[in-house]
Length: 338
Image (cartoon, rainbow, N blue to C red; front, side, top):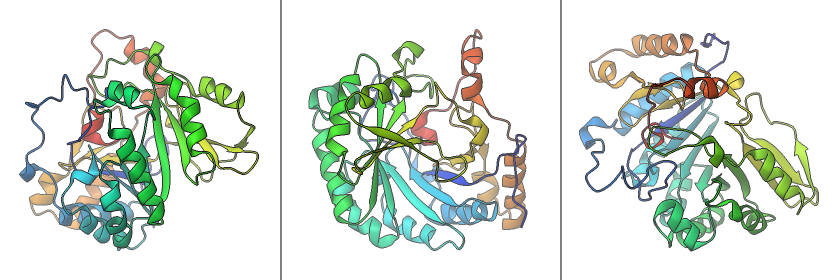
């Protein structure tokens, strides 16, 4: 079977599926509280795809060459009945990997049902161990303890666990070493994420970015590390292992080392839009033709055509595009799923 490639010859291999645009935290780099307050209008229930619709589209994406699904949000564990969806997706023939990204607050109660449904991996967002720093980052000083309990529950359930930590200068760079020390030797892979200009409201400034190079230098002053070759073409994180065998640490460097050239990821929003870049202005509506009665073969052609026309490479063009007066707006991370 011939799978679609975009205008830069990039295949479609990874689909991020957002199941809700709601979240129970207010991280400043994603959903700042001053914007996403009590009166913010989230998607009405009738506008979000139901599980049958997500599963049907998932099967079509696998026919386009997708090998991996990652469930995202918002916070995906807020979606009622999520293990049912996991079970449906896990049965899709040809799918090789099914993972989920979460803030971990509900993971303690959900880890076993998710595992039993077919989930094998979780990535947990944890930007600080200090409650005071967590309060500054996401408005909840108790979130750290709940997230740590969720990580423990996921490990006890046999799920593979990764942690994503977004580092922002002047806010949580003091958390780098404590996070590394906490999870070294724990069986958890820690990844540091450069602060990105996703969406329109996070107040991004390039001076606030702590580069992966800076973080690596800090870690190498404390630990002996060696680079690890990528596991596959297009792997986002650059990985390093502790030379004493006590685990790995990774870096996602969208700002300092863009990886657009190998990007094989698409995103499906909770209301059924296909978004071809995390920094896109908008997406392509799949819900309307899906609910309008279009058959699978015609839906497949639409997905293939959208991917075939893709030319996104925002991170490689970031500085030029940001310098333009009146640069275009972008979709919000909470809507498109990180």
